[in-house]
Length: 239
Image (cartoon, rainbow, N blue to C red; front, top):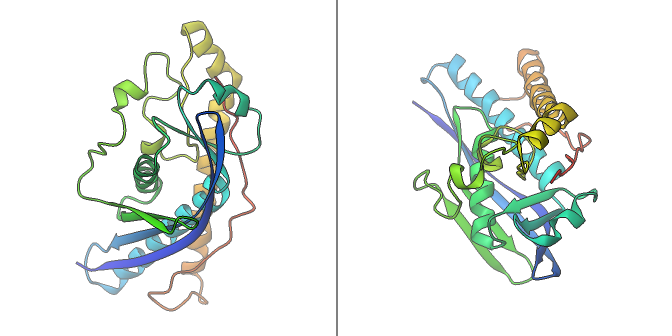
């Protein structure tokens, strides 16, 4: 069995909100992506190459179009509602801390890629402080993150935390009661978010299906960088 490896560094900026203070966090995010072929045949290696490109583009698009310029805030911060109407995406965490952020992103990137791909490492480099935070895949416990049960209480809008879902959102909310929960479902916002996620990922899949099925496809082993940055979408945060 053969594996295809690549490492990519992207500029990603955050706006950290903590203790009534906004702080701009300029960084580079580096991720290491591995994709395995079922066997060493030419056909399977080509499938692995295509899947590697799809996973790579899903991650790059997510980091560039969704994560970049996000506001990072603690879930129970009273100021959260003040940011709900802003254009900036919201990244909701149990605590605003570097290792919590990098572990949540590590889990999320592994959730949005294809099953035969794996992000082994995510690194956030703080440009101003010249500090680097790395998260390596040792196990799947993610001790820095809360359990599914504690993060997704009764009447939660989603059954699993955002970092374990194959969608493009980075926050979670819960209704106060069953009535508000059904109001959320009837609003169509959940369907809109899920539909956009499916549409974006399907478009990436279809683009590479065409590229690899055409006679003009690139040489084996090359990563094709397709620009999906125009697919900018910020889900509305609902309390």
